Image (tube, rainbow, N blue to C red; front, side, top):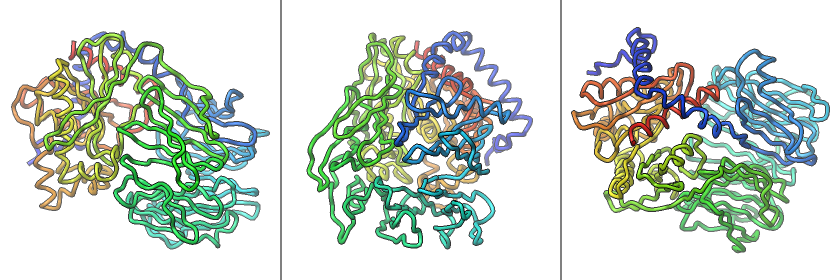
Length: 613
């Protein structure tokens, strides 16, 4: 019997009244502290940050997020697209989603959404004259330019494809002077995804067809003749094309132990870079070399190989960071680097690594790494970021699920915390992809308790070193913190639970929750129900000494239903826990205006400072 099931109806008077009252109560608790902190968080939040970049014959085109706008511009030069101008034109909030340019720098395709919606508009413009060549509503994906015209993918979100396959489904089209025609994907059922990439010599189309997250088929053929594209490889694990060189197609595959290896498909299949101890996350062909990114204890190092797989060099960075390739033309590659105190750096690699531009936070910071030992003896890696003084206050972030690795990244609200003597921690728990597919599987379905045990081990170790600890997670990380809270409230001095999944008996019935069944298990299957019920935070609230807890969500989150947060809040309130609820009335799971998002982050900072001081 679920006595709070009424909270799943967001139009229920009781929900609206609760939201209003609790937002007010939280504001009273936080007092003026949040308003005092906001200018500082807003300053870090507003640092102009490069999101992506594209190489063309006329220079680099880059997209940036700035204070209250996003822009696409020539690197170091003029602005091409400005979200503020689009807002004036369309009279609504605009979020730029992505762009691509053709190799010669003649055309630009960019997509944006209006008012935070997932579906948007795609425009193609002439970069010389700025004139609009084409507009698609709803937006299309994967625009790939040809000498005359372009390919694009259309994602059918509802209804059906031209040949009657029910959504969701994807089809690939070509558009040129003769019009628009379907060129790939006919006959593929619902749930398949298609992505197209061009080899760096512009001659070969490399098409990946995936079903779910666990299998892939690779097709290849002449870029201009889709009727000649043929299946060249398939596997029951993720596989992605890298490039074509000397008639061989290079692929990165997760076959084997799931740690990633590079193979070349020609007359026969050759292994170029075998599996190592740590995951091989990506690879790019640059000239006569291979540049690869390897994840070593949750941060990236670069490795340079010859085309036949001989290791030539290894490049590490001054701070542990996350490094990903943005674009390559086969002769050079653009890379984006990010760390805890570095919003971004843009590098170019053409045999040597060169820094092009970046943003860094002034101050004396250091990043430490350590391990805690989990209940079953597994070593769990974590980062600690410290400033000039250590006042034994730790704010620890965790996630542990969906094969997502937590690698160093910039959190604007964390810098003011460190400057006030705080230590920021990030834990690399099972369920993520930090150590490959085995690590992921050790934290899903019936193994989910491992994730909580890993987090408990990290928090306990910090408590043992004299730290007061605030535990933080959002989405699946909100499940992590709420499960840890009801199991071991003694390992934390406060808890922050954001946009969480908490009711493990009903998650699959709310919004798109059913897509998480492969990760969590199915509550309607008696065997799965048993292990889900054992840890479901909503069903395990008992009278205990709970620390101050902040549960926060957004009323318009259409991915994780806000009822998870509201119902858990009511359950904790019932046993007299010091719990607060903050509900953003104008944001979803992904989007809100920059100021709305920055205010939310400031409230988290204020809560941590107040509860740990």
